[in-house]
Amino acid sequence: MNKCALYIPRPGGTSYMIRRGYVDALRHLGWKVYIADPKVKLNCCKLIEDHNIRLIMTHSRYGIRQLPIDSININNITVFIEALPLNNDGLTIDDPYEIAHYDEPDIIKTINSAVVHTRIEPHLWVDYMQIWNNNVNLIHLPVAGNLLRALPPTCANITDVAMIANFTHRYKIMQKMIKPLFQRLELLNYSYQAFGDDVWIKAGLNYSGPLKDDIDRIARVYATAYVCPNVHTEQQVRIQAYINERSFMIPLCGGVQVSDNSLANKYLGSHCEIARSTTDFITKVIHLIEYRAERFKNIRAGIEHVANNHTYFNRLADLFHAAGLLGFADEAETNGNKMAIRHCLEMDVRLSVEERGIPYEQNIIKTT
Image (cartoon, rainbow, N blue to C red; front, side, top):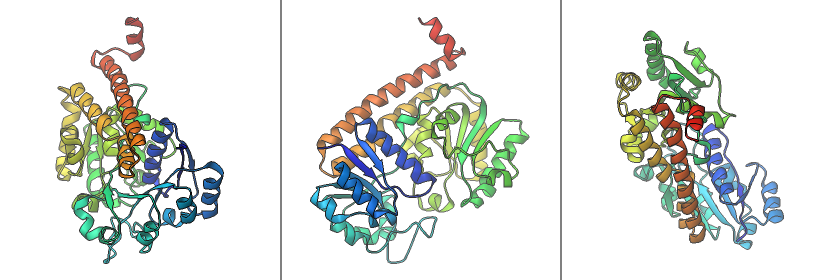
């Protein structure tokens, strides 16, 4: 089978990170991946015809509407589709535009080989995904950590707290939880770095700038802080939905996480601290700054757990299994395992020199 894929993305920062994770993993597995404009159907048709596309990854709304079904079936193309909420009550999660079109299940049923997946937890399907459930086989597939972008140049701590988050659509979370936390950090003279949108400035907090177009800096930010807070939206926390990608990237990069979403326990267990309130959030962040016993042991355990279970290689393996493409599933699992071992070894080197209190470069000289 020709290893040529087409990815039709969704707009938005979160979707960009997910796209990057899948595209990076596919390319590492030897796939040539084209990324198409989700609003130009003719462009998708041309790419299929000119490059013998064998796999398409797309999504609800714009993506599904760009699928040239006849060409897909004639060429025996497998399609992986991420589904948004679709129900009789018009229920969405967080955003009024985050809902699928009602004809999407009918469109998908005309595709000979399609796998429909969603980040929404199965316990919410009765309310949020009822129309999907009545029409297609749906599988749950959360986001993951991008193993190919999670290796920092160093794990040397340069700040007490580091956080990457945009708050344009989550201003209540900023006011209720983040602002009190960072004000307390300032009062106690702890250092921090804050990356995201200018809501940080509007809240009167120090701001280090955006990181949207500099994904490779993310690993360094997480690896060089003692604590990395992570927050979701109020609805995500309340109904236990949409675990975010930061939940996996923070531990994978060697960071220590405090999250406001207890759903993280399902995937990370003891490798993530869960805060139940603003006071609890502040208390746990400050405790982790000050209490560093077994810090490196815990970091290593978190890295290993995510590297082996929650990367985009793992997610691709699940998708290929669901599509019956067992050879590709085995390839994703095998390569993912190799990359996980390599990542854990590389991170252990960086952590070891910090644990021993010597610069990384000196360690290289002393061990030759």
